[in-house]
Amino acid sequence: MDERSKLLPETWHSNSSPQLGRGKDGDASPILQSQTWGTGEVDREKVFDKEEIELGRISPCRRNAALGLIATLSSTFFLLWVFRIPLPLSSTSSTSTPSSVDAAAESQAISQSLGIGIERSWGALSPYFAVEPYKEPPSGCKITQVNLLQRHGARYPPPRASQRIKTVIAKLQSAGHYRDHRLDFFRNYTSGLGITELMAFGGVEAQRTGQTAYERYKSIMSPDKPPFLRSSSARRVVESAGNWSMGFSLASQQVYNPKISVIIHESKRSNNTLDHKRCPNLGSAAEYVTAWTNVFAPPIANRLNRLAPGANITAVDISNLMAACALDTMHSFALSPICNLFTPKDFADYEYLADVEKYYNTGYGQPLGPVQGVGYINELVARLSGSPVQDNTQTNHTLDSSPVTFPLHQTFYADFSHGNQMIAIYAALGLFKQDKPLDPATRRLAGTKSKSKFKSRRWVASWITSFSTGMVVERLECNRRLEHSRTHKRREGTFVRILVNDALQPLEFCGADVDGLCELGRFVESQGYARRNGDGDFERCIE
Image 1 (cartoon, one colour):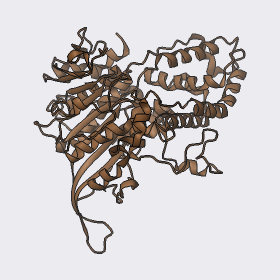
Image 2 (cartoon, rainbow, N blue to C red):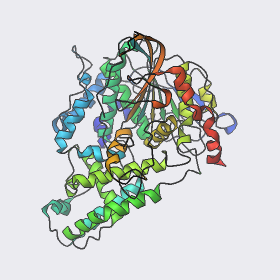
Image 3 (cartoon, rainbow, N blue to C red):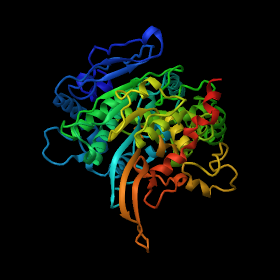
Image 4 (cartoon, rainbow, N blue to C red):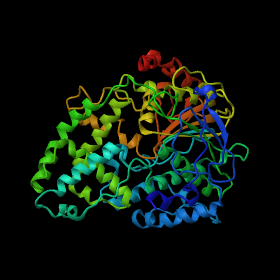
């Protein structure tokens, strides 16, 4: 049984697979097929484009959720022991759920167990943590709608990255002798990392975020409008959505059993607002990644070569070895001995490598990066305003025109996606914008003469695209007196606020107040780039 099977309930790992279909006359029109997918006996309208989607051994959950609880608890006891995290809620519990424990406190517990909090310097490979404690809406405001966009949980490296990790480990193991006891473990070390798929750790992350979502937003739930879930079709994303659903169900003591209503196919030819493959002319961040690697990595490589004569470690090897530290830690639920080879400064420099890569891959530093997020923003605007989607970029018009696959007037939407796509959405929205671009040659903003402004950077990969990162857009109805107002002026109407990993965003682009609230109308107006379909950038993607 693989690692994920230790986490996920038995019913998520049967040999049956979903039925796959093709559109009429072989076109890309979706086929709607009713199938159970989630935590209870509920129907699912599953959507596939004409190309078949390989979803592996994922199957419907048809058994009693108690089986899921038993499987979850058996694997989570080890998580409790190593990271001192409270157990998920039992479906038979009569007390309040432990998931109500502040997420920031949980993150602190993980940091303490790792020693120096280095897991927050792993960039996009960081495990989920709350950047700030969640702030309740101000008095006089009531949440009426929630839009969650969440990255999949911790996963194993893709094939090429996996091979690079194996290569650098083999180099260190080939050394004739070691001059530092911290390297001795390599004599008998075998990597247990898999390829691409969701880790057990990632499943736990997703479940806990589902539990937190229920506890935080249960007041807006109703049996006739449960959360509406969509997922991009990559297996790790679908499994993350399923684990989130299970966490939500357990936290509600099975009152709510969310289903994945839509799975959107991933390919270079498929319109998918939860994936970024629809831009064949997208540039690369390789030049910028290489530039920073050549600055920070050579001293580390030289140090390791002195400690392991004959290993011939290169600067390029360093980022792969540091990735192995992060992934091996989450795979084994304990700090990897590989991590002991690096200093806090090494990890700070590695974090900046991730910052640069995301910034120049699909972020502000990539001319065709932000346009990847336009379709999702136009869907978001439609949900917030309760109006049909207006978009000519990545949206699937067939799906978004149907009340079955894109219902309006829901109270809770949850979409499951990838880190690179979330970065594009941030950039299209206007979040985490820097006054100047990141300098790939020095750890500072381009054009500045000192590193002082580095401390005030908003663009930090571990803060905005860790595993299980969540962006939440809350719609609120307010009728309140403005604080610090001598005239006792009241603010009434519909507002929006955005949180990323629980950190409230300032939303300067739409004139948000001190509570992070932006009038819905002004928010919609601020999204001119998306409403104009990317000002021609989408056409440049595919021309």
